[in-house]
Structure formats: structure tokens, C-alpha cells
Length: 486
Ligand code: ADP
Ligand code: MG
Figure 1 (cartoon, rainbow, N blue to C red):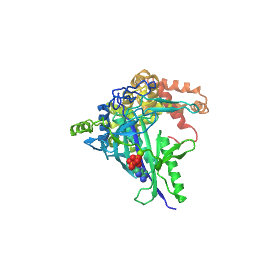
Figure 2 (cartoon, rainbow, N blue to C red; figure 1 turned 180 degrees about the vertical axis):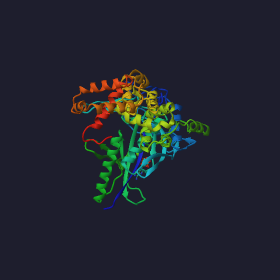
Figure 3 (cartoon, rainbow, N blue to C red; figure 1 turned 45 degrees about the vertical axis):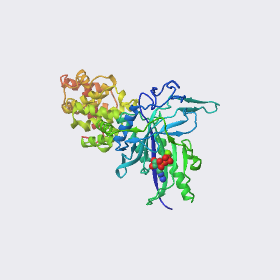
Figure 4 (cartoon, helix red, strand yellow; figure 1 turned 90 degrees about the vertical axis):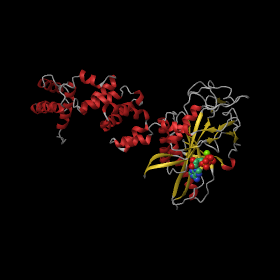
């Protein structure tokens, strides 16, 4: 039984977040009432002509420069014909044989280390409208708002070797376009879409096997599941001695299988021909240089920078995967200093994200900002509060939306700054009152007040009750029989 190698190439569509459509000044924003963002051009009315959206070209250029593509000085538009209600013009303007960008790559983390997934090309095109088929109803609905919205299609080389790598490639691209601020790139809303071409070949073979293309994968979960199901299907066929027929597939998440939609023989003939109403697109060296100069820091550079600050590759990846989180992190560092990177990362990923996730909030919806985290880190660094009470302070700051230092002040936490001074007092008093300790350990919460009172008295009111309570818990826990904690 031969062992097969999985070979995958992705075709990724990404909607560009420009204010207007690709070839008309008609405005577009997601979520509007159906058919409110249309104009004569969008509807393909006779006599309308395309005018390029230079902002879209600039966004597309930004992406190609970031991915180290070779920008083509001249690219050409073509008409891709098909007949379907979502396409009022009857054809889509795209760049078929002459895309604006060739080659380039996306860097991902692979089992064997960093891997470059090479790209074949990126081209620009316009989106189609949206049809809705209501099951059991005899009408289909069509919304032309999305028709004509600018897209880039990124086509990879068949360099991807597993479902996980495919997801990693798509995730990385999503992070990149978000860093570049050119697309929302969410799969749920369709501003990022992906088709996966999958083939198998005997391990060690250099020739490509026959591929099948899985269409319309609209979540990362489905992308991985669909590839896995398709690999299973192809493996079964090959092991039964059958041949793979080049086909377009769809994925059924309910049954977790892929199905043939059409074979290559049934494939549509799009009758491509040059777009007569659009001159070739010229992108000159000055424009490319400007795009290069304006390039922001890219995810892989950001990860390297974070690792150089002492973060693990894993933490650097977590922070970078969410641009808002990375910017938050950078803002904390700008206040607290780069040397605090590791602590800041811990506070963010372990504490703040934990709280946010529990409430299904994003970092942008955090009730406390970068200043608050910087303050927490500084308060701990300066030994004003211990890390333990800092967690408590962060919790209060989060819940009440006020600054950590205000809480430290309000609760007198900074008065006796040294936990160990309080701890010494606590241990002394606990040791002097074994009977009460016994009661506390057996669950009589009432004697707590006795201990807190004693400790407060001993500290002459200088200790903060919050700290005393925390330290008391810690000491009592450490004295619980059966625990060897000193
Ligand atoms: P088309 O334009 O007909 O869809 P392309 O040759 O442009 O076909 O390839 C589209 C995608 O399919 C690319 O991402 C490419 O990497 C991928 N691909 C091509 N051949 C294979 C193969 N044998 N196995 C897996 N992916 C492939
Ligand atoms: Mg294709």
C-alpha cells in the first residue's frame, strides 16, 4: 500500500474595503438593506462604462508589495462570461492572462519550521451579487449590493502539504491584509473566501496528481474538515485502484464528506475576451516605490521583533494573530518600556484575555486600556504591590473601569507595600493562635475576622485589609495538613 503525500493549492478571494465599487463610484458598505447600493453600472444598464477605483488598485498594490510579488508594469482586464442572476452585466471583469502581480510568497509556521508558501499570482476583479434560495419556497432572492465590489484573488502554488498548513496559510493571509488595513477579511461575512485544490501522489514522487477543487469554504473549520474529507475520499479511490477524475467539489459539513459538483468535462467555458472598455493598467516604478515606502510592519517582522524582546515564538504568534491585540501590546510597551515585554504579554494573554474571553468581548471592547496594564506592571516592578494583589487590583480595575493606581490608593494597598512584612505578621499571629487556626481550617469562616482584626491591630492600621486577606489565605492554605508548602 503506497503512502500518499497531500498536495494543496489555495485560491483565496479577499474583498477590498474601499468606500466605492471597483468600476463605479457607487458606494458600498456591508450590512446595508438589499439593493440599496446599486447604480446603473452595477445593474449593467446599457450605455454605462467602467471607471477604475484607484483606491482599490492602491490596496491591491499594497498587498502585492507586502508579499514580495513582482508587480507587472502592464496588466490587462478581461471579461469572464457566465449567465447567472447574481451577475447583472453577464460578465465579470477580471485579470485572467495578465494579472498585476506574479509570484511572491506567504511565510507560515510549519512542522519543520518557517515555510514559504509560494504564490502564482494575485489579480484584481469585481465581486458578484448575492443570491438567496429559500428552501421549500419557489422564489430566489438576489441582492446586487455586493455586485462590483473590488476583490483580489490570491492563487498559491501547490506548496501546501496538510489541512493544518492550508488553514495556517489562510490565517496568515488574513493577518497580513488586516495589518495592511485593506480588508476586513472575515470568513463569516464572506470578505475572505477560499477554494482548495487537493491532490495526492505517492510519497517521493515529483509529478503532481490529478486535483479536485473544493469550492466555497466559508470558515477555517470547514476548510480543514473539507480537505481532510477530500483526502480521505481520494485515498479510498486510489486504494481501490480507481483513478481520480478532475472535478469541482462541494463539502457537506453535516455528513463530513465532499461531493462531486461537476467534472472537468462539464466545466463552464467562460469565453474570456479582452475588456474593450478598459485600457491596460499601468503601475509605474514611482507608484511601487511609494507603496514600498508606506509599508507597515508585517506579521512575520512583528513576530521576530517580539521574539527578540524575549517572548516565546508561541506568545509572539498569539499577539500577532490579532492586530488589535498587537497594537495594544505595543502601546503598553511604549509606556512601560520594552524590558517589560514578557510580563506585559503574561498580563495580556493570561489575565486580560481570560476575562475578555469569558464575556465574549474583543480587545477593542476592553474596559481597561494599555495605560492600565502599564500601571499594573509598574506597580509590581516598583514593589508597591505584589503580583498576587496585582491580580486583585486588575480585577477591580476591569470591573469598575478605573485605573489600578486609583484602586491601590483607595484601598490603601500601597501603604504597607511589602507583602513579606505582612506575611511575617500573619505567620506570627497564626502560630500564636493554634485553636483559632484549627477552626479556620475546619471551615469556620467566622474566625477569619478575628485574625484580620489581630493583624490590623499589629500593623497599627497600616496594612491594607485586601492584602491581609490575600496573605492570610495563602498562609492558612500552606498550613493545611497534608500540604508540604513552606
Ligand atoms: P484553474 O485556473 O483552472 O483553477 P490553476 O492551474 O490556475 O487552475 O490552479 C489553481 C490552483 O490549483 C492553484 O492554487 C494551484 O496551486 C492548484 N493546483 C494546481 N495543480 C494542483 C495539483 N495537482 N494539486 C493540488 N493543487 C493544484
Ligand atoms: Mg480555480
